[in-house]
Length: 233
Image: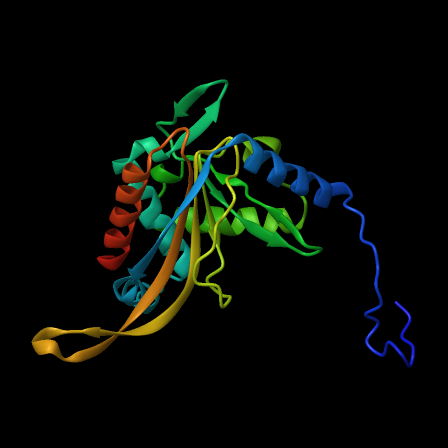
C-alpha cells in the first residue's frame, strides 16, 4: 500500500474480500453457530504442578511444551468422561472409543486449522508431542490430509501465549466439545496458617453442544481436568 503525507502508515480504508481458505473458515464458523446450541463454562486451574513436571522432564532431557502437558491431561480425563468425546450428526450423538484430538493451529494470513492427532489416547507424552509438532509443520506447508481435518472427536485451542485468560471457542463441528486454554498468571492464595502464598493460575474455557451434553456433566469434566492438571506429576 502506498504511503502518503496524510496516511503515513498506509492505513487507508480498504475492502478485504472473504476468499479461498478465509471464506471457508467464515462459512464453517457461521454454520457451527447456526446448527448447534453452544454454551461455555470457564474455570481457573492451578498450574504449579504442571510447570514443575515440565521442569523435571527438561532436567531429564525430555523437552515438551506446556500445551503438550495439557493435552496429556485432556486425553486422560476424556477417558473418564467419554460423553465429551464424539460428534453430533444426523440427529444422533456418536461417541468415539478412540480419542482423535484436534489441535487448533494459527497460520499466516489470518488462517486457522484444527487437524487431529489420531488415537491420541493410545500415545505416550513424547509420541503425542511429536505428532503435534508434525501436524504444525505440515499445516504450514499445506500438507494436511482430509481425514486429519475432518475426523477429530475433541479439539483444543491454545491462546496461552496471549493476554487472553478466558474466551468462548467456537465448536469445530460436528464435534461436541472444544477446550480453550488461556494465559497463566500469578495469584495470591491463602496457605497453611492463613499465610499468603503465590500460585500460578490458568484460565480454561470449555464450549460444548448443549444438544449432546448438559451443563452438569460438562462442568464435571472441566472440574476433573483442573484437578488432573493441578496434580500433574
